[in-house]
Amino acid sequence: MEDTLILELKAVDVLLPIHQAQLLTYLRLSGKQVGILINFNVELLKLGTKRMVARILRALRDLRGESEDRPSTRSAGQRVSGNNGTETSDVVA
Image 1 (cartoon, rainbow, N blue to C red):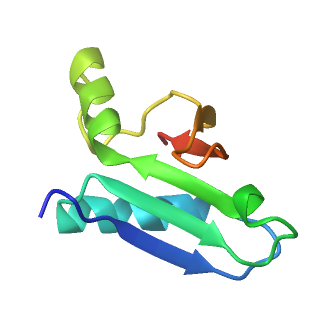
Image 2 (image 1 turned 45 degrees about the horizontal axis):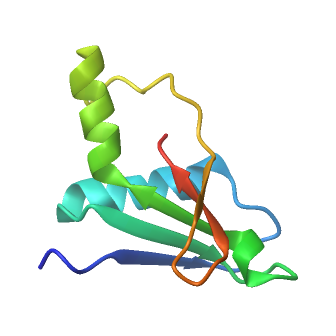
């Protein structure tokens, strides 16, 4: 289904790059395009939410001529507005 996503739920002090890599791995293995990483150990839930889009990662690699095995050099953290007016981070690692 195209309208499904993967949720990765955490309750950690700090979200680490390994947590993002874990969600990206789930996206690649499942063939899903969108995943959300949520850390419940924050004061405001929107501060612990990261949205990750796999197709953007693939498209950027295609444009650069990179293989999926080689990590991208693009930095993460582009801010976008959510449907309810909150901000989330689109992460492309």
